[in-house]
Image (cartoon, rainbow, N blue to C red):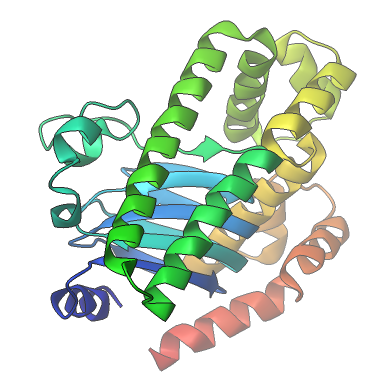
Length: 288
C-alpha cells in the first residue's frame, strides 16, 4: 500500500491525495515517505503510534509525519479519511506552517513531540469533512485551476488543524470540565481490566456521575459507558489476534466477569462471536 501511494506521488505534479477507506482488520506496523492527515468518520479502532496505544472513535483527527511508525491493531468497520501529501507542495507556505502549534513538529525534524489526537465536536467534524471532500472533488474533476485550488484547500486544512489544536490546549489548561474528561479517559485506560461503574470514574475524577456523563458526551460524542465498552472490546480483539488465551480468560482480562455478557457485547460490536472473530482473523493471516 505504502509503495503504491509513493509511486502515485511520483507520477503526479500535485502530490495531494484524499481517500476514504474502511478498515476491517489489522493494519500492520508501517510508515510512509509522505505526510498523513487522518480523520475517523465512523467506527472505532485500537491505534498504536510512537508506542502510544489508544482507542480511536468517530471524530478523532490526527497527523502522522514521514517515517512515523503506526498501526491499527483492532479495526472493525472503521471508516476514515486519509489526506496524504508531500511537503514540496507547501514550499511557499512551509516557513509559516512550521511555526504553528500542533503542526510545527511535522516540518521541524528536530522537534520531537508525543503523538496525540484531537476529538472534534459535530460542527468541527462537518467543517473537516467538507475540506476533505472538496480536495477529493478537485482531484477527481480537475477543473480549471484545480492545482491551485487543491493546494489552497490543504493549506487551509492545516491551518484549521492548528487552530483546533490551540483551542484544545487552551481549553485543557483553563476549562475545568474538560480537565475532568481527560482525567476520566486516563482512568479508563489504566483500569479497563477491572470492574467499575461510571460512579467509580466520577468519584476518582472528583465530580458527579451526571456531570461527567454530560461533558464526556459533549467532548467524545459517545457516553462513558459506550466508550468503556468500545475500549474493552478493542483490547479483546487485540488479544484474540495476538494471543492464544481462552476467550473466558480474555473476557476477565478486559474487565468482564461474565463470559456470556462479554460474548453478547462483542457480537454487538463486531458482528460475530469472539470465537468466530479469532477464526476469521487466523484464516486471513494464513492467506497473506
